[in-house]
Image (cartoon, rainbow, N blue to C red; front, side):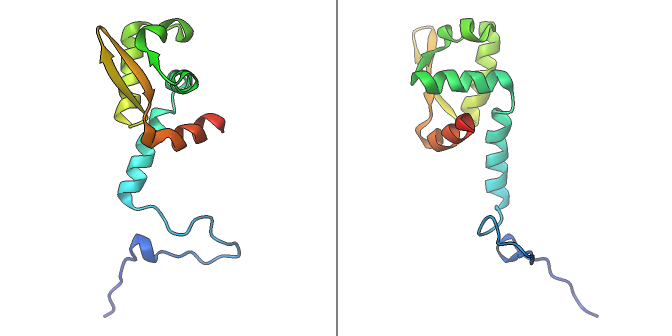
Amino acid sequence: MTTATTPTDATVRIEGCCAPTIEAPLSEPDAASRAHRYAAVADPVRLRLLSLIAANGEMCSCDLQTPLGKSQPTISHHTKLLAEAGLIAGDKRGRWVHWRVDPSAESFVRQVLQG
């Protein structure tokens, strides 16, 4: 009787006629992290919100309502999701939060917004 083994992510190689696009497949944690970030920007309102913050360097939540045409609770919901994905970071100043692109996500944000 023979036993089958399941290859690990690092050992999976697909033979083909073309050169591989990447060196190695993503690990499960890396795939989950990236999927979370992409899911956060897969909404038109969040994508516009992120672009407004990125284009201005920093924006107060109060200044996001008019350009987005959304209520404050909606803005809060979307900024929360972007912050949970590690794309933006905020500082509370009085009643309002001032948002900026998280420095650790600058490369990702640039890639997403510049296409």
